[in-house]
Length: 154
Image (cartoon, rainbow, N blue to C red; front, side, top):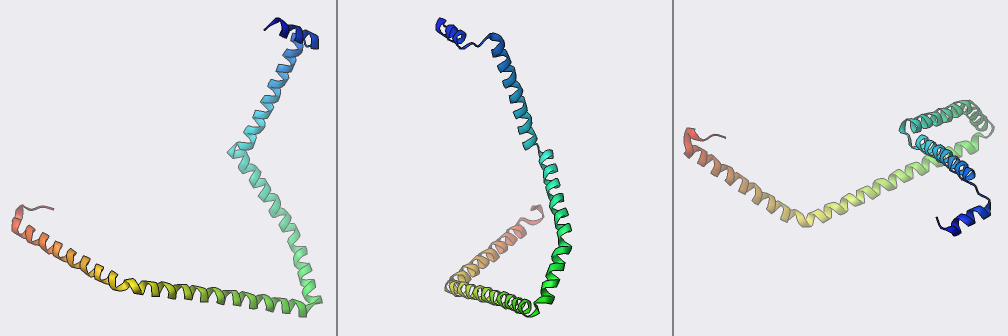
């Protein structure tokens, strides 16, 4: 430490004891931060917090369900025509979406079949050649085994 540093420290009024207390306080704060970080990333603690959150959500849903069902029933009794029309519109929209998806899937399958049609002759010829080659290889192996006699082992 240079002379200028020690003089500057004396000018600000910081003493050795004050520095020690600051260091101890910083250590304590750092220890608290490390403990909080450990609690945050600890898998067991995370699972415990998640389980508590799930329990509280299901508890709230269980408490709110009867009231919600009662309100829905009251709404249906009070406004049967709009509710029925809404249900019918929802069913129609669902059916339309399913039909559109089905037709799109059929169109994709047709495009795949037509694309495969161009290659089918080539693929068929390659498969036939491969199978013929495999049959001839097996026949050649069988002839070699027969020629080797009883000394040939697999």
